[in-house]
Amino acid sequence: MILTPEQQALLEGKEGEIMAKIVKTLVMYGEAFGATRMVPVTSKYGHTVISFGLEVMKPVYDLYDKLIAAGLPEGQKFTADPKPLDPRVPSSLLDDLVFKKIMYTQQKRYEEQVRKLGITSDDDFTCACYLDQVGNTPKKGEVLSWAESSAVVYANSVLGARCNRNSGMLELMGSIAGFVPEFGLLTDEGRKATWIIEVKCEKKPEAQLLGSAIGMKVMEEVPYVKGLDKWLGNELNDEARAYLKDFGAATASNGAVGLYHIAGLTPEAVELGESLIAENAQVYVIDDAELQRVKDNYPVIWKKPDAKPELCFVGCPHMSLQQLKDWAKAIQEGLEKNGRRKVTVPTVFTAPVPVLKEFEQTMEAYYLKQSGVVLSYICPLMYMNNPLCKKKAVITSSNKLRTYTSARYYTEAEILAIITGGAK
Image 1: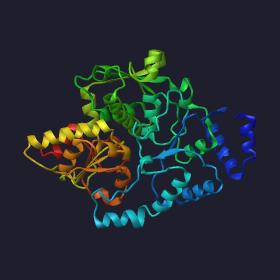
Image 2: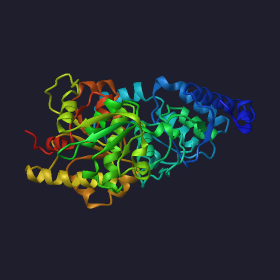
Image 3: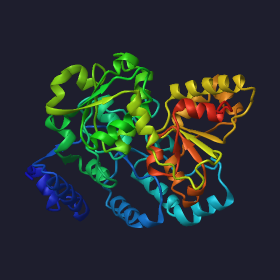
Image 4: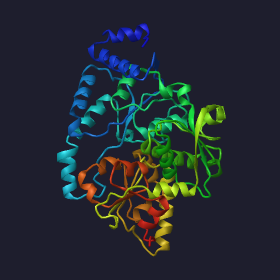
């Protein structure tokens, strides 16, 4: 690793022992991946994946205290993943006991720490920090120091920013130091596609299902996707961005994708076209039958596979404003069609606090609340980490939530039919 004189001085203790350790950690991180230099972090905000106060992570919170005491994060701006708890989300007394007395015992301590680190309000807790209402939206070419797989893949792919899939704490260290090791998705070569995905479906593929299929096939490599223009067009409008948000989250969680290119749509694909495709790229053809095969092979790990759904989560990653409006309309129409007034399964829609505030000013929000749907800022994954949830029949349209928990995946159309009483 070749450091600049300024970086070398930090490593040697110019700004104290804690900063020296941060730089040493970043150097070791970079050298493990073959990086030969550091590059400046140019984004205004950082984003941290840690949003929860788990007892087993006390060493992390001890480290936060050291960073705060040293004054290093002063002036740093960042967002964080969603909080793990919300009293509005359905839970039993036993659930609450496990959450508060066993699992998230450090939550109060953690939230006090992040306020000192620079998070100013609940508006800053979301996995979809890049949405306009939240404001942590990097520009094309900006270098980030983020962690959170769904946010990183969105920033790289839809916004054209540059960020590796960092782990928790490393992302904060990069933001504090102001530089990160250059390797992987920070390089032109690392952003080339080693897979060509040919989408040959007869109907619009479900975003979460298509992303899942691609993620499981290419794993951590970069795919160049052809054929989606038939449904998404060539404009990054609200509909396309929402689709790619959910698509990318599935590629990142069902595989380890940190960047994808969509022909004619995402910034680098528009600018560079097929020159982004590396030599000898492999080809994966996806049609309706292939997506059905992928879906049919998802394991059902409910204690009783034929159990009646007890809880439904939609919004992992967090929903956009337009998604909330579209779902509200679809639920209203579904309930009217089936002669019902309320959803038949306790249902939670999750979104960033600023999005929820804006949505609550609309008529769609009134109709949604009348239907019994709960609006929350929670992280469904953190809720589902409660071991008691393994005994519950939880359904979701999120392939990320399915992958990491016992929740069972259904397409959006299937979820809609189930919760409005139209499923047979």
